[in-house]
Image 1: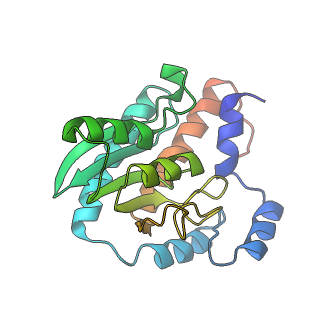
Image 2: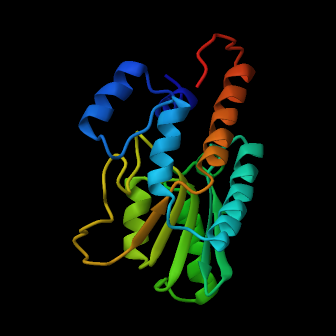
Length: 208
């Protein structure tokens, strides 16, 4: 199975898989059903501001850059005192680096801007819920708040699949808000995988 097919699995859960996951995690799961997704997102995204939406749209623009480069479209910006100090988009294929996720790159650019690896008081905005690797980097870099768009039902590290943040061994408090512009964030991901299948000549009706 190639990398695109592996990666797209988290967006195309079979009904049986989704039902099984829902039974195990009734408060932190959504399926491809719009009503289920809407209900889940409404629980997540009740605590955000117009500023949060503004910065998430900036993260979406980073994700679009990744899309145009045929990378899985995930984008991230890091903000301190209302100013963007770091940004990044997924570059795993371009850099041939499994760790080159949007969050990792944004954390690096933010640290360079501040000339300090400690990102206390910073908010990280990312279009897809951080994976466990990125959640660990968020803790290590001392980011104070995480705001994500779409939940990740396969690899989410902020509570949807596993929770690296809450009750972490480092005893660092990180506020997490999810579900902001979730439909737009998820739509970009779906559009990417649909385009990749078409370019591979796969016209089968296996929509996500």
